[in-house]
Image 1 (spheres, one colour):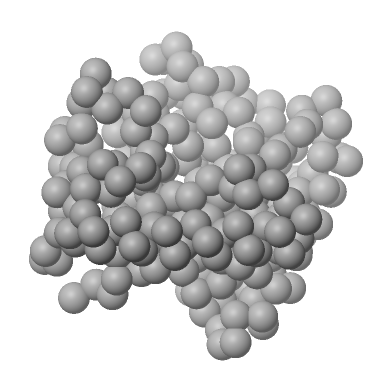
Image 2 (tube, rainbow, N blue to C red):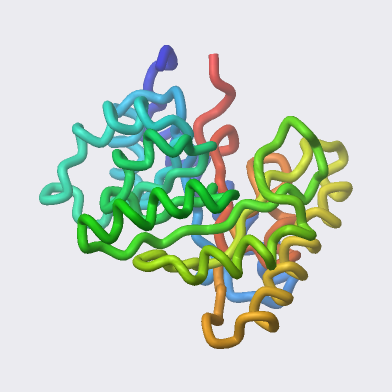
Length: 240
């Protein structure tokens, strides 16, 4: 967390630019911009920057590392920040799930049954229901987490039977490609997989959320149906 907090004026300008891009992309796709949730990715950034971002209107914040999130969330007690929503967007180890259950608005990165079973066990014990997304590796890159596309339905079939879990949709990390248009097939695939999921399990549908798109490609993701975009650099600048 070695980057100095951005000034409020800087954040206002950056947020306005991102919002203009969201509106333009949504209109291109004949979508309502208000259906798209902007998640500010704040990994490595200090609590002071999150406080500034909250002050200029951001309400959804995404963290990648459990220990870093635990340190930050202590600065934002729910009583003082009732409308601040934490999203866990990084790879989650089973032994760290206990820190998130009941504490974050959404876990984006569930990609195997054992992790889902652990979250379910904790949720039952704490008498809460945990919203999750199933992460799919739509790029085929071995370095990325997520289940293979052809394994999504078998995975979902098992997880849907677990108590106190609520599958809200799917998440993917597209390959970092230029131009960003080359990521379109990865986003389109996630949307197609969501449609297959709803057809296969209509009794559990809908699965409304598609978490996809980052600073370099979020317009393409919106055109392909993203309901949640995860933005760091476009809001806060490059990390030092």
